[in-house]
Length: 168
Image 1: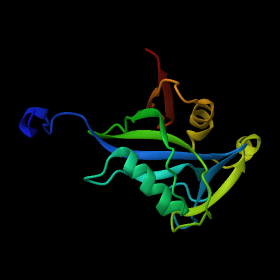
Image 2: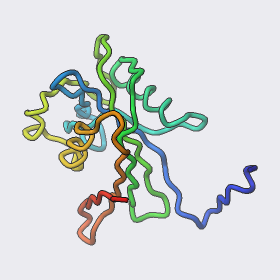
Image 3: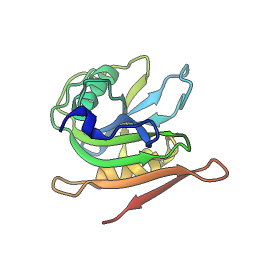
């Protein structure tokens, strides 16, 4: 199939691909506390990740983002979930959620924020980005061989994030 046969037209819904990665070490998870200068989520904890660049695969982008934001090289990432985020605009977000185990190395911080190991039982008392309290338990419960979860994020009339997990 050639490019012409892909059916890409400007009248179709389009997505921006992004990755989100959670690295675990025993009962800890590595989260990024947003730098105070960040426009979005300053001082809040999120997973590690960002945009997929042109010419990059999703897994390749996830590994790059981990390296850039934490200094770690993680070879054992596995896809846990795919989230479609409806922004209410003609372009949405396609979020690919990964999990990996810490393989050693020194964790560094980046201009994006400070990478910190957080105990799982302490997560509920941390300032998390809005969806993490729902998303992270699913990621942490995901085991090798489990099916990938599928979720849909959208905003209601009050601009409040709504999260729906789809079942087959």
